[in-house]
Length: 387
Image (cartoon, rainbow, N blue to C red; front, side):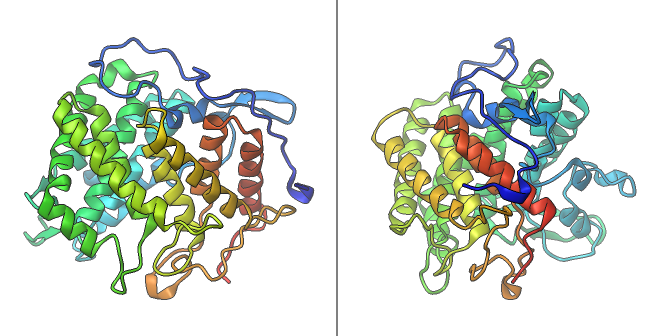
């Protein structure tokens, strides 16, 4: 590809999968899980920037979707570490809320690890602590009470947002276990694992799972949201990797594979993962990220081979929409991004950047890291406005 006008930095991946680039941590947690997964290694990826070797976390690449500011508002200290949308609900500024907003509290943990900044990790942990303290019913739906009017309101996203929350908790557990500050958060990790097990059990409940498939996996016309299939697979796959109960692990892993294969089967031949009867560039990237989280829970074999082949095709499709001169992403005709009816925001490239970086580690493909930098620079220089 001709990087042209935006070849501001030159990035060369100096590592392949399993570099061990993340800091060594004494093993104080039980021997559960998958060790140091690929997504935990990404912030430590050694790259060459303007002739100097640095860790990715020390660059200005935007590969996480939120910053600490979204959870730390000096004007509302009583809501510290709570997402802004939920703060508005708690202050009676809106009547809806969502656990989906709280998933971004994982971002400060990832950034804190990369920057060796315990304050960022602590902020993320406070956000996770708040989330795990909220009520959840036998239907797997969270409910939140606010003091401004005494109302108790169910999460408007139902078990879809519970699924999203489990993926965030699972990712956070592995980020904390591989953190320079792991010893400070052993008790927190144990609490999160227990919550993951509780929520996975409710998500996998036959009645709750049928409701999710009917009400959240497809739209009113029966069109699949492919990213939601990978979200459910990642949630249950992470839960299976973390539990000490072999029966639960087998049950959740089986359910994860079943729904992941539904997502794989939905993929078009050109690598497009359908969303609401069409394609969507933003959700293509987010869905790939969720598939990568699920991939990290798998042993080598048929399921992982099939999944990785699908991720390869999905990344090829996404890469084909990047202008190889400016780095701008073609988001035209997306079914959700920039869609006023869906109340979507203009395209953010952070998901695209991180899936490319993650796959450069997993597949040892430096061209993916180079494209990630191009996309990031394109977003910062020319932007990705709605058509």
